[in-house]
Image 1: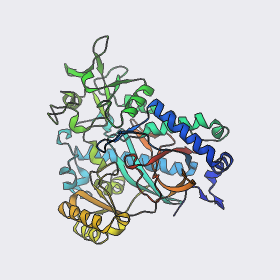
Image 2: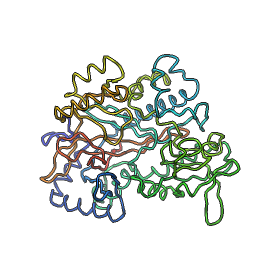
Image 3: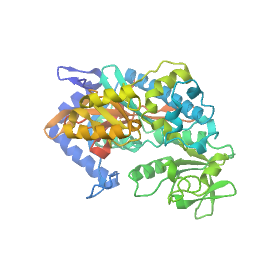
Image 4: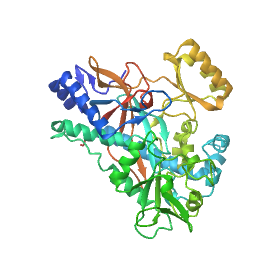
Length: 467
């Protein structure tokens, strides 16, 4: 199993400074500082809401003080690979809502797209500015060896977690300023500026001046509400709820104390189905009536575009390397994890015969819910899950149980290896861009492979070292 820091006898070069800092600081002081960090997080309201489980739904995501480190060379590869993937996914989204060339060529089965619940027929023929559908692409990456990086899944709708990337760094710099003094760690604080720049770059044709950008949130009960308000504040834009907006004379308007103000770009954190009760779910209390007609006519830009969720689908994920070759004519820089689609008869047979070895996921699942980790499941759990797969093979994919890399993490008895993954955030406007960093998620329980915050996972600061 690959450990990011290496072994006590052979610390990997990117971690030499971190290892010296940990030794000099000592475990007891690190634990004390961890408690102080958690107190700060709670005081300023950095919580993650988990509903339906009883007790207090507002939880702190565990924060680990030992950073995860990438060398400059490692980051260059990740940067190029993520940008390549984001460009291919946007090309795919444009294609399937227009000519469907990749489907006609037989590269991807038509049924996988047109029968997919995330495909919105209402978006067929719509021309988003710059042909960009997914403006913030979160790519989940795992590592299994020194040079072995794999993409675990793509998030094209509204990937969350960037506020933790920023707050983790802020906390580390506040509590351990000496750790950054003289060390060449690339900054991440340009993300809000770059996000705002991306949003303004995709202003609609009807916008003739400086665009007015807003962040649309479903409200304070949403699990990511802290992130919504945090990003709106850092970008200097209004955080609005659906009742703050209305449609009139072919445009979207925001209610203000000085009267209505026209809105040009909406960074939405509301699911497609709830955006507009006239176009989608008529029972939606979160939507803005008439919003979709204005969008379709070019009067406002919605980021990310309705229908972008087809790029999140775990069955579509299997074909992203093919998209890269088809649209870009390039060799994929980052590889997929080998994946079996249970909708394919031979794959289904294999999966059912090897459940004890595999990780099985719902095609439309998220947040770590609905998964089966075969090696950790009981015989009965595997048998029950097999019946679910048989009842709806199209709804599941399976992957091998990878030996995810570990990173040193502060546990009750000191530092211990814990499995990690990584989510960089690619911004797509006139060009694709990343800040040098991202969200490292860590499985806080020994041996666990589930890093999702909804399942008890924690977060770390992520360092990218400069040359």
